[in-house]
Image 1 (cartoon, rainbow, N blue to C red):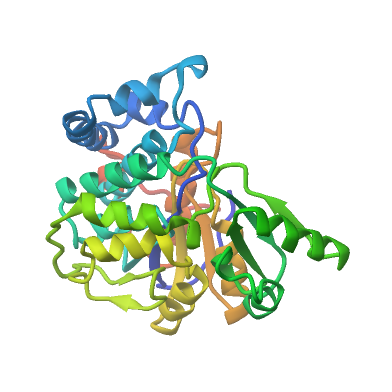
Image 2: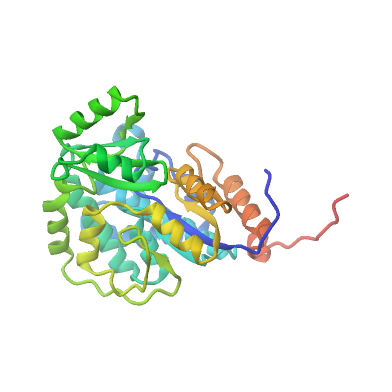
Length: 346
């Protein structure tokens, strides 16, 4: 691999939302990395207690029996893989200076930041996935190559039916809605605006069609006891840094209903001095947006952890190399417990 020397640079772990899952994710790490497996086993016990099904079984299920693309399974499973990766990186000395979570990824971010206990985080993500499973088929989401301002003009007068669901970078948005969304897209096609459907989500998330589901989630969560963050967390609901205590049931309802403000969260964290952004997940889905956000700021770098069907250890070692090259600490003794010797390169 290749890494650019610099730093030390403050790093942000970014936990993306639903859509990065793939059949076979995490299996090699389960077999080879005890830290990762231990975290999965903890989550498996909690999820099994709340749902009756097993995370481990879902991760290991063959394609013909896999349920990884159903929200009720995808969201808890992605959460588990994400926090397992974060735990493994932490064991190797790579700890975040801040965290950001995109949509469902905010639950993992809240846990890694220390604002939610593992028990509360698992309960929130299980309920979130279960309730949004009921939204399946309720509208659609589409990526559109328009700025926020231009997108707002395109949907003007139809805001009760179509919403800007996410602003992940300065040059594009996600739109969500029901039948009226097709009318907007037809108008955009006539103008030559590029757009494409989002096949990984089969409902109109972060828009008006989510009102009853957001309300149901708030009721289902009831009481949750968030605390102050031990690591700074930048909210993609507010676009700003939050203290942690505000991550109550009402917040998680907003997390489902309101637009994802990833671009604003990145801009705010960048203004606070962060320059290296590491997407934590089984496959990069936010990496391009992160890179565009940083390009708009003029500097910074975004890197991934794992990729679909790749060699996870090689990819994680590449991530470590990037972090180290940017001035971050790596615990080489933990990475190579048998020891070794340092040699000079010619």
